[in-house]
Amino acid sequence: MNKKISEIEKNPFSVSTPENLSAQEIVRLFVPYPEFETLQNSGHQFLDGHRGSGKSMMLRMMCPDCQAIVHNGIDNIPYFSIYISIKKTNINNPEYVRIENELGGIVISEHLLSLIFISELFLSLRSFASQINSQDNQKEKLINFINKDFNQILLMSGWEGEIKVNSSLSVQEIYNESISVLDRIYAKTMQYIKRRAFVKDDILYTGVLFGFQDTLLPFIKLLRNYNILPNEKIYFLIDDADNLTLQQTQILNTWVSYRSTDYISLKISTQLNYKTYTTVSGISIQSPHDFSKIQFTSILTGSKKVRYPELIKRIVEKRLDLYGLKGISAEEFFPADEKQEKCIREIGEKLKAEWSTGGRGYRANDDVYRYARPEYIRQLSGNSKQGHRYSYSGFEQLVHISSGIIRFFLEPAAYMFAEQIEKNGNNNLVSSIEPSLQDEVIRKEAKKLAFDSMDEIASDNHSLTDNEDHLVKVKKLQNLIWGLGEIFKAHIMDANASQRRLFSFTISGDSASLKPILKLGVEHGYFYTDVRGSRDGLGTEVKYVLTRRLAAAFNLDPIGFSGDKSLSANKLLELCVNPKSYTSKLRKIGIDALEENGQISFFEGNNLE
Image 1: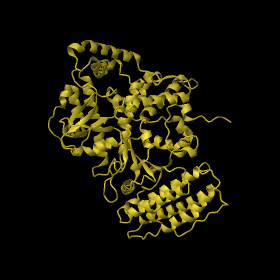
Image 2: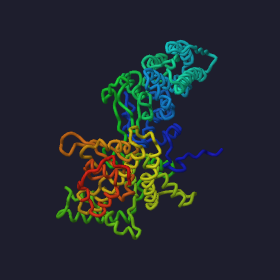
Image 3: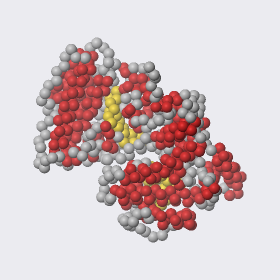
Image 4: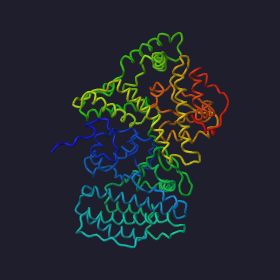
């Protein structure tokens, strides 16, 4: 029999959805993130981060099948987790809109969430029934629980039937009987919701009603009393909670507010678009009183504190090892353009020599870090017509370009690897990626992000819910990004600018009209946000960071950033509406064009460039 070749053995940087990977593949690929230890502690937690940052991988690693491999058996795992992918449910279908506007909508929504949690718990227990508590009386305990307590819970919740199991059934069959009852309850609930869409008048709901405190918690307590659950720590891993409806989100928040962590902990992942932090009664849940929060996307890709470069290095080298390249470092596999780096070092040495008489930093090395690479890019621009261009290559640059998102390193790396293996000949082992090929892929990805991805957002009519036309918003976002790119490029090209390597900006003035555009940009990974002390020393202000995945689109230096640009709300509104006239000024007179020159209305958007 031929051995099945895994995707990693074909391409070490292959990216697969964690839900589609086996437990063995998850454990082989997983590199512990700094936040992973915290996430495994008891307590309700929100895990916030952009798509591709590794949230699902962490949650998947907490599932029993993975933990059993790590801890040498299911009976040794430190907690029992139930993974729930909201994307894979249909609890946010359009039919829910009507019931959510009615008084009984809250009750129906809580019932459905409770039902899904209980069903997934039963499915998880069934999966590990042969491994959990392997004593001879396991079946007897399960039969007693089903016939007595589970029946009682169903009866008190409005179920008119009865479930009876006996010792002639296997443990798997007993679970199947119970899951079948829950499936029938779910089907009847869905029928009711769908039928509501066809009539104007109310229809009386007479089916089963589950709840958190009167069904789910008692259910958990009883399973623990019977020792059917393998451990006292029970975690529900709710992935992609942004996909819940507003009312379902409020219900989940209400569960968080109960602080019932003695029985269960909720681990809730979001893609920075969680709809609300209020409960059904309008009370806000707050950190650290009700939950703790882990922010999983960092703008500081070079920070030793964040350890993102070291994390990527370990991921890359582990994947290379699985591919068969043992002992090859990430830096060796993704080499930089040595000719380019030599020129940058020479510029750096010149800046060091001139620092004592004309340096701008506190130390000579400060000037080298801030100005050597931007100066090389500026000098190179004069040779662009001869075919020379800046090379986006080398492990360090690729790490910064990924902008703190692991997927944005792995996906381009997978493309690079596929092209390199084709270039080498399919039978030859790839031991490194040529700098020119790295640069080519990074430039393609930047172009795709700037154009194709915008088209995809434009086709998504559910990204924003306010009144203004969605296509107009997307166009304004695209204009804003291109305007910002030109501003940052102008600083690179100005040899006298004090800050030449920019990727971030703060806003002065009233930014209310900009917020829907910026929110759309954050949601889709074009901007990252951070909070910093305001320049006047009074309070704080939001800093927006442009993704460095776009560096190649504007010939920017992606390695870190040395400062923030303060831009007026009026200037940003001008970029949203009429970027070409503004960027032409930048090309003619440089960063002096940033001086204010009047105001423009945000709604003068009929003739967007």
